Image 1: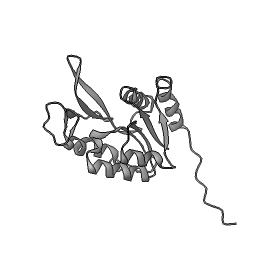
Image 2: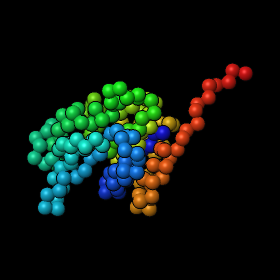
Image 3: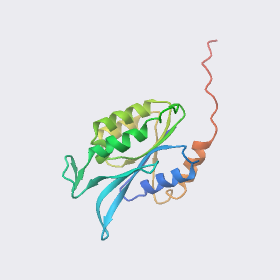
Image 4: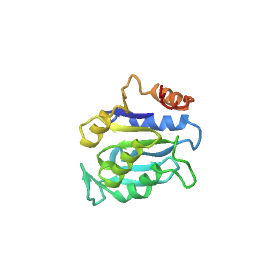
Length: 184
């Protein structure tokens, strides 16, 4: 299952992904989420936190960059140290049948070439992926959205509360084993 949760900024993509992770059995998923860093009620940056609990500042108005996304300098080292390892199977863990949650396939994260490569590899692997994605146009995410094996789910105020439960149920449903093609 490969799902992209698409929504505009502030639609609740991160909240939906975090709720989904909370509804799943402990340690059944890997990946990361991002969240705003607020100071006196104003957004000054973004932190990246793995589902295993490691957290660092990804982007901040006081970071020098490059790159810059809007007013934020982005620390691509955070992508290398936290995001990339969270996408790979742990030592001794089988890659097949894993679930990876990604928040988000956005401009800050996609500024890291190694992350784009890892996402491409992940979407080609035998794993379940649920990723949040921005609604604006981007060649990388537009190509993902056009793939036949990817379901794009539009996150709206009407479905954002029920969607995490629906996705958790789908992800935990036993799957029928694949049958080899008939040669008759």
